[in-house]
Amino acid sequence: MAMAVPAVVGAVPRGPRGVHAQRSAQQPAAGTQIEVLVIDATTGDAGIDRGLSALSQLRRAPFSMFTAMRLLSRSTLSLASEPARATLPDGTATVTLVSRGADGRYTFQVALAQGSRSGNLTFVASAGEPVFTVRSSRADRAMILGFIVR
Image 1 (cartoon, rainbow, N blue to C red):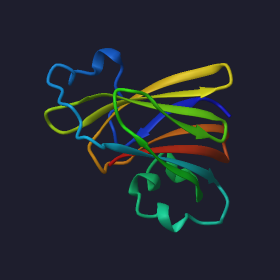
Image 2: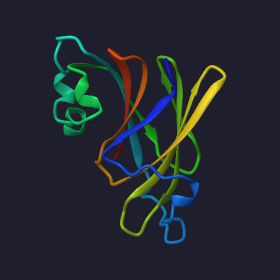
Image 3: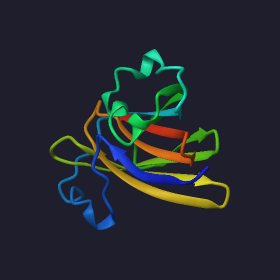
Image 4: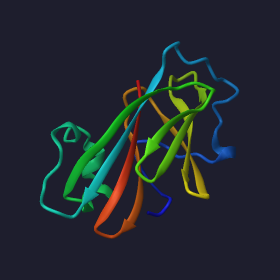
């Protein structure tokens, strides 16, 4: 499978210079967590898992091209300045809190590793706001990764 494609819905991806919340950052509430969703998406006719149907972002482009979605795994990690790692079917995702802005939005970095290849994505999202990215190997199938701050 290919590394993450910057197809992001529901968040604002930021580069290192675009993360401007650092100066006014607050400490996250103790016990802040992040859910990591791993979704198998295809162009088949199996439908969308009941637990995913409430996530409206998955019905918008680029995800709307997939008509069948199955939740492969859901894990909960601590969201802190220390990295937390989730195992993926084809590698790992390491999530690290960068900051929490005065507006309550969290900036977090996701480092994706697959063998000797790696890539980094930065997201800005409010608690409860799902954000997604795609890891894909074929036009008819993708692995979608979702992240939800709790």
